[in-house]
Image (cartoon, rainbow, N blue to C red):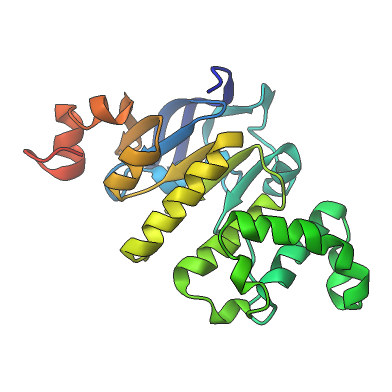
Length: 252
């Protein structure tokens, strides 16, 4: 597990018409770790995610990724630098097959986005890599199914496969377990654990068992500020976290 800082925010602030959503957040994410952002509704988690991934510009503060200032970078440029936000920007084409969906993502990497309209023969060379990615996310037996036919949890796995096709060094997951059954949560947790072996993951997640099982570091936000930070064992026993996140008398 690397000790190098891959992502850093310094005094990051975002105001919306006088309302402060993110208030002086300084965050450091170590390379090769799983870093979770948690907090009650309205804590600023999604706004912080949007700032990091450049869907929003900060009112003040700075963001550095791999030592470079990306405070004013464009969202579209980040995947080329190795930072990819999953689920919200991973497009799934419902009436293409599972295999075809991953091939489209691979074609983006190759700069050949219009291959989708060409004959199957012209994209066959991408099949081997696509099948490797689908096997990695547990979809080997679904490659010829249309994406629209997949159960919800399997759709999420397909979204991860299309994201991995972009070969990210850092993957940002926005509530990856939302709406999942217990069985799907177990499956996707195992998948995240596997893909985290070779990359950095930052995730927003409300399910505390998932956070406890997967995270190396947890940052707790409340009212736009960092309330606590550290491993789950310490954070979950912090009285301020218990009060703000779960209500007095219940560990986070």
